[in-house]
Length: 81
Image (cartoon, helix red, strand yellow):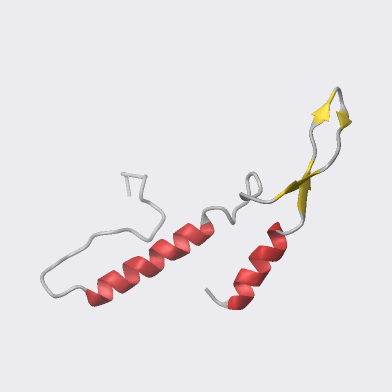
């Protein structure tokens, strides 16, 4: 992954804080040091990019006669496609 993309992802997740709300009142803010933001689309994106790179490399380096089947159209779980 290009360094600029890594920097952007880090900036989106660095210096995050959270607080617990009890009886409608927020409590002391806590530093969040691990994980991704809840519902953040960036959570599965690095895994998807990694798997895409692995499949590309495997496909290019496999000897003739070995076939791999995979889908890249987003229909992995839609059997009607």
